[in-house]
Length: 195
Image (cartoon, rainbow, N blue to C red; front, side, top):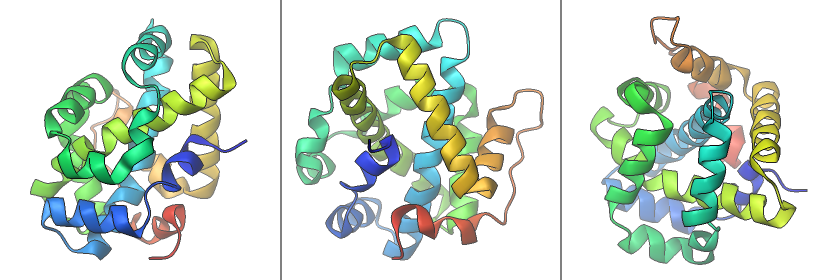
């Protein structure tokens, strides 16, 4: 069965990369690296949140209510017309007070201008939740199944991109100082293929 990352990366093709780069006013190479950092970061944050209190149930409810995966039916149209406000609201829930640190991590690891990392995350957040919602629906998952799925996704990403996921873990670990490694950029390209 395809992973969430597989489901999403199938929709983040060269056309989507051009649209996102254009929307951000950024170089396609830096945008590609930033996407490859941002998606695992968002998935890691979602996985982390499902282990906190009623986080899994809240995410399950949000997916059932607002994110059925239909956003993936027309990624190009979504990228062209969707306001960033929806993604901003998602980031508030997913990253909370770690958002600034997440933006800095994406910018540092990709070479994307720091002022563009926030809009990139806001652009990607609805797509990530859409992919998660689609997988949830296809597999008939409840809150526990969703938590298990995200935990498995985090483990797979840790194996394939340990530097990225180590940075994500440090970012989300409230007992640390929030600093992230600067040398993960070289590990990112493989997540979305060679660009």
